[in-house]
Structure formats: C-alpha cells, structure tokens
Image (tube, rainbow, N blue to C red; front, side):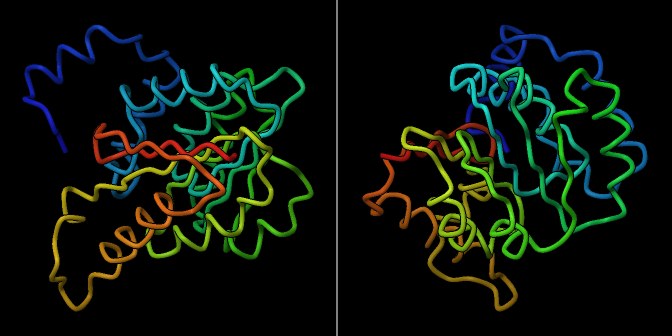
Length: 214
C-alpha cells in the first residue's frame, strides 16, 4: 500500500540504499515458490529495518514472524559481532528455505530458528533483548507485546509491522470474519497508552511503529 503517489514512492526507493544481492535472490525465489509473497518486507522496508538495527546496534534480537527470512537478515546487519537473533515462525515448511539463505549470509551462525507458537516459545528464551520485530498474526500483537516487554532492556526497541492494515484501522464496522483489524486498533491504542514505552507510528508502507522501552 502506498501512502504517497507511486512516482514519489519510486523516487524515495531510488534514493535509498540498494538492496543487497543476497536479498534480491531471496526475494526472487520467494515470489517464484512461496505463497503470499507480498508478506515479504521488501527492498525499502528492509533497508529501513537494517538502518534502525544499525542505529540500535543490538546484542540480542527477537523476531516474531520469520516468513522466508528477509527481515531477519536485514535486522542482523546491525547486530553486534557476538550477538544472536532468535526468529520464530509457526510454519515449519519454510524452515529449510530460511536456513538456506541464513547460511549464505555472514550471520548464519548467529541466527536461531524456532518453530511453533510464539507465545509458548518466548517464555523459554533465556535472554534479554535490545530489538524486537513483531510481524506475525495480527490478532496476537497485544499478547506478543505483553510477552516480550519484560524481556526488553531499558532503551530497547520494539518494531511493529502492518499497524495501518491498508487503512482499515480507520473503520468502525468490521466484517464478521475480520479479527485482525479490531486487534490492531486495540494494539495501537495499547502502545499509545502504555507508560512502559514511548511510541511513534510511521506511515511507511503498511505502517510501522517504533516503540522505545522507558
């Protein structure tokens, strides 16, 4: 979804950092072989994730929602040399695809995959994190926040993707089977009102929130 005219959006991409070759390969193969390739972070957002990670310079990163591994590799670019990235996804069929690209990168030995329910896995991770990226099932965003906020260092960053949900967060009536929109509305409200974090919502692509733990 574009919140600015497409020609201006193209200008923005053209004048941002180039997409690394490995990520170009990952993106191509995702579009060729994997269902719902629009779930991929993609060139522009990937460079944004990379830049934020480099500014934070995290030792430990947690990602909720791996998909094909694109965003994990972007986040890993800012990780400390002795750092670790834990990434969780419920779809075990993507495990080998992710691992192939992780191992092609220089960060492969620092990236640890976890398959299953993130709300069950997070309590088993004996780490404190500096950077968290939430990009999984929208219905559980608030639950993910509660699960990870006490595992986040003071000054640590939570990035939350798709928080504008194609503009649906402005709606007041929802389809019966739409559980994602009201959940995201509630999540955005939570981030605004929770005194443990300070938050800025960026109208980038489908919406990206940056929350800093106080």
